[in-house]
Image 1 (cartoon, helix red, strand yellow):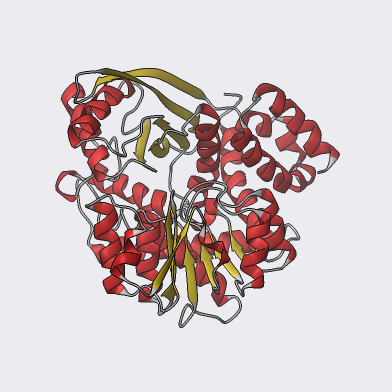
Image 2 (tube, rainbow, N blue to C red):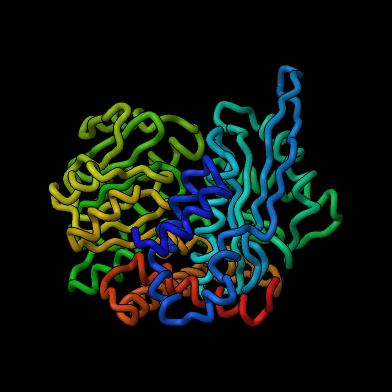
Length: 447
């Protein structure tokens, strides 16, 4: 770490103690940006970096609700409105017991750069609660969502802050929250994305993050005259992102071989075909079962209890579960087993040591803020459709998504080249995302 980075980070650490994920995200970005500040000192003079690491607003609130047994429960709700220089705050809501302010600040900070890369007019934000939807009845989830939105509704709006889903927040939760917002505000407006098709949602939105991650990987492979055809692909997670990443891998001729959840992983050496993927979607989306059940249906697979899928042989890895799910040792194992391309469907799934391994071995590595930007890109397209009160066809949205991912890849590649780091998508994504936001912040004055 350079002395400039250390000096900057020591101040950030002092202001944000115990927020390890946030500090990790900031340090990775700051290391990439120092050459930009040296080349263009006006950013340093205007303290753009010092301003960009501070959220514009942090909202924290109590969420009381009554469970099916009639017992009062109390959770904590958050919304981190990080940066609105290029548009309304935009970013998901996460419902998971691990949610705390540091995790949401890391996610909101990453979202600023990710949204900038899409070229759409969206600022960065993130929110959620330590509420766990797992094991709750639909009635309990509805009661929680209504209480959560009763407070959140006063801080959001179609031109202010437009949340979406994230871990633990799917179509069911978005529906309950949208219904409560509409009830309180007496307004039918595009205040949430990821909505149902009957009430303002966009086609391809559930698929967007997974599809986009694969589209980004496809573009990286093209730089080495490679394709997905016949390649074995290790995927972590088993939610929307993982499911639709696998679907698009199959579309492109690849062979998904793994899925995982919080309890363990499955490895199906012969490949997960469309029939098997349909079973996983039904298991996870409708029955809310565990991925272990896949091996009971398909004996070709093995279950690895308590393990992540990074020990399996693969050509391409798509981490689609959660933050810091690949460590340095696992990254070494991936490369030893033949993996030469990693495209991140989750937010910051690779630890710093793992990223060093990728870069030292010169493999294709697409960081989350670029590779998984497809989800928020289609959220932006949903906002546009809501504003115009129209609905685009599946083909139109998918073509727009594909085009956006191609452009994000090109922007990252060209920016890395421009700043002397050819092929380094980490540097390219961080600098390209920063420049648009930083220039706009300068235009808007010291605010």
